[in-house]
Amino acid sequence: MSDESRIREQICATGASLFQRGYTVGAAGNISARLHDGWLITPTDACLGRLDPAELSKVDAGGQWVSGAKPSKTLVLHRGIYGNDGEARAVIHTHSTHLVALTLSGVWREDEVLPPITPYQVMKVGRIPLIRYRRPGDPQAAAEVAAQAAQVRGALFERLGPVVWERSVEQASHVLEELEETARLWLMTHPRPQPLDAAAIDELRTTFGARY
Image (cartoon, rainbow, N blue to C red):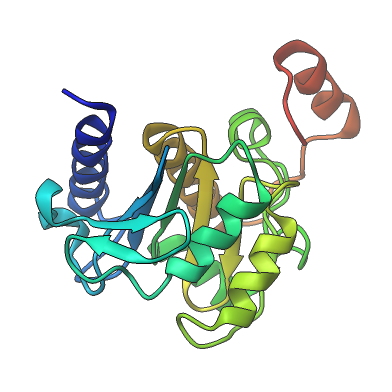
């Protein structure tokens, strides 16, 4: 199996897994992956639970659609992330319930939507900034994410949900899942838990190389 075929299968398997577990619903969300000659991205208005490897959109290095179904309207967002974070190999955007709810109820801070309350949040996710509401597909929102892409692993769109990126589709999925779980924990705990202190975070940096 070629690298491209393997990545097509990974995108579809990840989409099905996220859909089955309620991280996305209907035709919401999109996934992309970098290739040596461009990108693969899920088609516009496609259900992540029912993706066909052969129908994934292929886009060349210049951003031109070359094969498959019509690419997602978030293509500009994905390309901006890849262009500003040379290590990013995969991007996932969903409308995950608890993260959207977080933007409706009030994030912790605009530059860090959740406080560091668990070690794996610090190790696997890091700081996640808020992107204030703009319509889906707005290029200005994409530009705001791209400008921060080299410093963080993701961002949270107000009323729309998270976008995360990593070195593979699988790793990006892990970031998304940890982020959504942290939002769920934060929303369900009363009173709110205290953040990990500076000493605890420094220990995670020293021991595990956490980028926080």
